Image 1 (cartoon, rainbow, N blue to C red):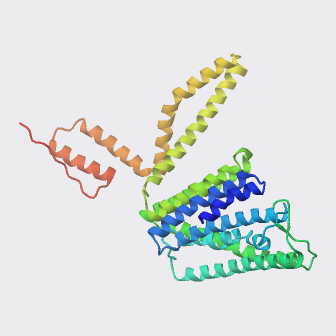
Image 2 (cartoon, helix red, strand yellow; image 1 turned 30 degrees about the vertical axis):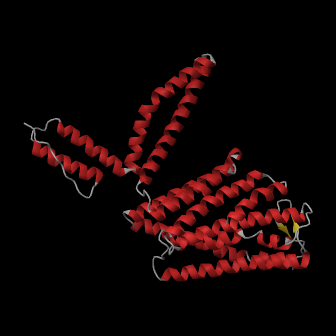
Image 3 (cartoon, rainbow, N blue to C red; image 1 turned 90 degrees about the vertical axis):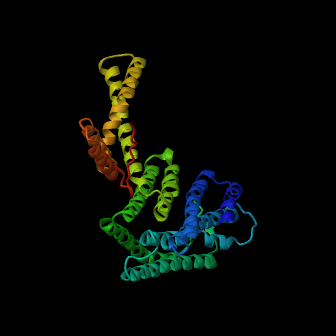
Length: 375
């Protein structure tokens, strides 16, 4: 693993390729490797850790092989094992279709929910294995019969007639559709688990869904905002998603997810509202009231700063009510206790009320209250 990662940079430099794209794949692969190593070390019986370790191996192997093949067949370097590199260029297929989807099905403890899911997993592995075998068989046929020809993007190009290997590979599209059809089934299993889960299991699923949402958002942002491509994909898929998987599987600070979600949503909403308000005030001052631009910008900035804290508190309260209910209920309980405390005169009732409030807000295993007796 370390050798594959270290080899990426010198191979990229020798191949005269852009370092950014390869560095992005490196960023995606290494955090997944770290999480997989930690999970495999802490829970060696959990297959998810080993599957996560297989993902960066496939990504890095494919990256090194494609760069090596480019050096041999596009730049003319006289290096051995060129056909092997062209064959290993598709190693990411093993990651995409064999290693990654079972992680979702086996999440979080590596155990299938019932024996009937074993048949689902076996059928999927059989279909995915058939697709991988078909792809590699076609690649071998092309290399043996036609030689290696790389296109402008570095992929293996086939010079073929309609009855040749590429036509045979096109028939594997049906197998590909069968593989893709399993993915909603795996996601549906998580949805069913979510509806039935409670406590720690529900928090684990919440971590996974949060990481998946950030990964999808990063992928969409990379395609919609060219300036953030491929950084958004690397951040979402390579950093946030494996981190969420590791936290969920190892059960490390599970209940912080509610606070993270509520704070992220609150600050995103506040930022959007303030940006809209700022832009509206600038347009109003410059276009309607005909103020000078520096004056309008300064006034709009002061208005946005003055509204930040009140707006943040209000938005945070609304978001907590929906996404961080435990904190919202705790705040409500403490506020009610403070209101009752103003009129309380009996020490015993205050003590009992305080113990009840602490139990409701913090839910400790044991509550005791010591009061110093002074003359």
